[in-house]
Amino acid sequence: MSRADESTTTPPDSFERRAALVDRAMAERFSAADLPVNLREAVEYALLAGGKRTRPVLLLESCEAVGGRAEDAMPAAMAIELIHAFSLVHDDLPAMDDDDLRRGRPTLHIRSGEAMAILAGDAMMSLAFQVICENVSDGVAAAKLVGELASGTTAMIAGQVYDTLGGFEKNLDDRARLALVHRNKTGALIRAACRMGAISGGADDSTLGALTNFGDAIGLMFQVVDDLLDIEQTAEHTGKRTNKDHEAGKLTYPGVWGVEASRREVARLHEEAISALAPLGDEAAPLRDICHFLAVRTR
Image (cartoon, rainbow, N blue to C red; front, side):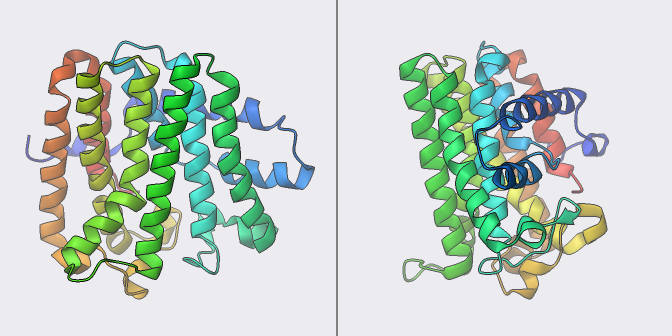
């Protein structure tokens, strides 16, 4: 399959059901968090504001694809969404991307002030590790999950540094720099989601390897699509300011590769991700559906 079917431009039903379960679990867990009222409200504003929930859904589906139960993976799913939400809040800050719109609403620093946005982001990072430690009873599994989440978070932060402050090794061309940014800033946490789901489901090393390869391919594909949406869609449609990366002079796939070559790269990564799932057989059907959707999404 060289290109995803255009009928997949809406999320699969299973995707939306999983996302709703994640939303419900997070609302129950964090509306009662032992935090100052204003901090809890800020966390809820950032965390429960909607969004696709791509990372936690991938985590839950990866768990079931290896024979595990989604309910056992829910602490890890909440944790990875907390890290994602923290990263968005901090990325939107004036010192970073300086965005005023996120998911169709004012960004947290616009709503609650810069100091609260920084502190809410900090709180979501620590809550992510806390929710695993408090809710995963198997100590070995909990340690593995914390390690994966920490590794993915560190790589994500490194990617943001590359994207905004540089720090590249010498003699890298723009294509190599672009891949380094995307594989870290976006790809690392998506890869971690797939691996954490596999760990939650008790996967063996071979199956964990297959889901790692899937996560690597789909994570990069996700960001290439994002780069295309940034120049092809409106802010009203995507719920966030568009064309900002181009205006800021950042490295993007359309800017470095061109639009048509970027679309071909999406198709190549889509095929790579689907191929990686072959060892999992029919159990990976929901992951294939998600991959098809993410290849042709419009927001």
